[in-house]
Length: 236
Image 1 (cartoon, one colour):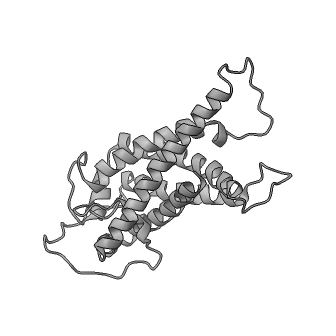
Image 2 (image 1 turned 180 degrees about the vertical axis):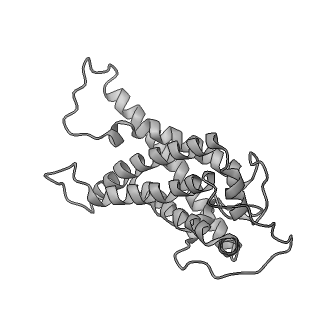
């Protein structure tokens, strides 16, 4: 579970970095979408790795839950946690919410199934148009809050599960985990907030055969390719 969690952390960092190209405009986002499609074998390899990681992560979480219940079939009469966090207490429900969000997000921004006006390889307009609905934005922000909590607890727990960090006398001091959780969640959340605030005005449609490339940010990550379907827009 720790290994699949780390793969997920690396993916969301790369995906967030790519999404921030929205602030550079349509050309930057279009170039990023094209970049993700420069090597289809690599795209498929990354995509399969990520999907497998998500499935294994879900299975491991289910197995841990069942083992915990089997170890104590009857619940505690009274719970009085000594050392815990909100992130730890909500990790299961937050994971379920994130799984629902991932499915919706793919249908919304990758396949365009539930998008009001989806255009292939035009992620700028897809995000601009798709995030105008306040209810959709509210769902995205709720999911980002769940992601922050999940990252805060999960990234901290993963390094300890793998034995790469020593036990601490102050288990609630998790500065690196806190930084990762806040930066990623805020980096994602700022996009729907900016979109619903009108900071990403709709741009002219790209030509159907548009292949012009403006070099994207060096930090744009191929991790984002994992959910880019062969006929997708290249941005989630």
